[in-house]
Image (cartoon, rainbow, N blue to C red; front, side, top):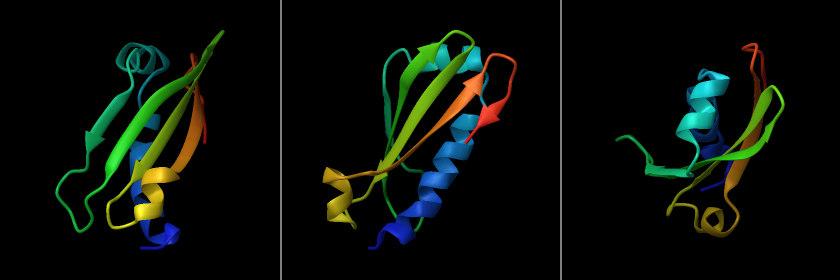
Length: 91
């Protein structure tokens, strides 16, 4: 499996978390979230963490890996985004 094949799953997870509010993210990510994918063509693991919490914003890190892509277990495909307290999202 190539990186580009895992990329849509990362985008899906980033989009899933980016719709949450600043306050919800702070509350839900007090502890790192790690969970398996929903049933689908590729099984993967998602890890979501609060990378930074500043005045009026949070930076969230999202990573995905799959057993079908052994390289991803060591070097997961990842992205981060900002959610501001006013609701603005920067991906």
